[in-house]
Length: 286
Ligand SMILES: [Zn+2]
Image 1: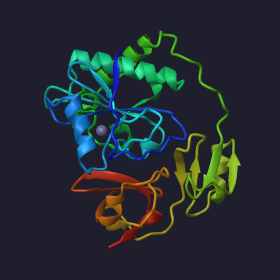
Image 2: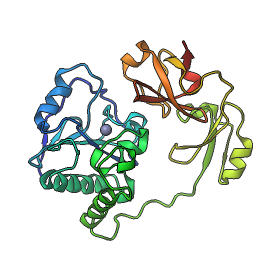
Image 3: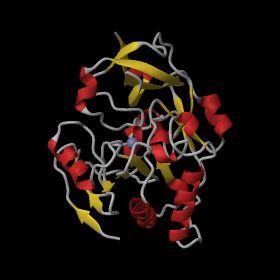
């Protein structure tokens, strides 16, 4: 595997990730374009979009942002995952064999580096529901994989095989802890920590959320709000996204539509395209 470092200086927050618990796979969405052209796009445009790696049609791998740094690619998952964009020959988004093989190798390499395994591979789709990478999203959701997700499962199996079949590196078996906080990043708001999810739910007050040990929200008692799916909203200036990541600056200047609400987590976007997931308390109705 050959990785060429061609670091970008634009659309790069120069921020180290505090943790790496997943690896996010994407597709470029622009058929036939090269890895280098897409790398240059990130460098030369003010777009608040970037990725750690791009894999080209010849299997070439360009590292645009070092893997330990945050890229702007996977919404709230930027906080815990390096991102990989894949080039593709046509609008199905399916990868050719060279790109695919490099993706398997790169994912195996990153799994080893961060002591992860194939179960920690995620799609952009898993985070926001976006049809990305299209070749690994089921047909029923707009992708080109079958509805059993055969291609995505095969891909994970191929990474597992590359890792040596022994599914890697044993993960730390830390006991689950459920923390009750206003938001994951606001550790000072914590009102309790429990090994039992039931007890954590009981302790959860209005406006608070129960998080698992990885910071994933598992239960929320949402604050009362007139904000509903379909509401037009703005994001409070300086507010972070639902996982505590800094948002791209343009987000504070725009009006969005609420696309989805679950508990205190609201997904906002424009014309059906997801922009971010934010805590509902960070939205202002317009
Ligand atoms: Zn994507």
